Length: 201
Image (cartoon, rainbow, N blue to C red; front, side, top):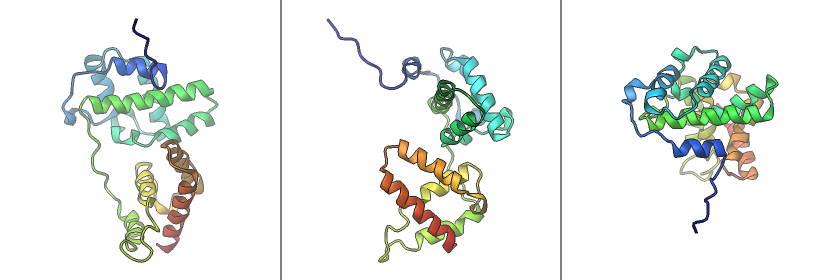
């Protein structure tokens, strides 16, 4: 007799993975969160549209951008800050977890339907910081800023500039970094080196 398999991760997420959509949408048709929500009923009818719309509404309020103008790209790396936003508004722990899960489903579904994350454009204001990180490559201090570019990319996606990137932002990034399975010591080292790069800029 076959033994039942145990799904990995959240049961809701596992069930939704089993019903993953097979229809792909032309990437040019998927640019905003509104585009995605319009495509889901046709391309992925088994997904819980009401909860995804509710999640999209909270994301829109958090970023202060209408759903019709909210680029799907904005969802990348958003989960840690989005969870903090919900906690600050007194959402219960299970609700925070559920909304974060639905955010992941939105992003994953967009990719399954053919959306591809565009190459990240580096604003001019961040280029001197990256230059500090890159100038040590191949020198005796090689590796000093290894990993720091990850923080820069995360900051850009959050709409942050070097001048308004705060210790709280760095803490949020660190929490997300640890959840990727990285060590605490490595995270502390990267954060310290990132602060040094900002000072040298």
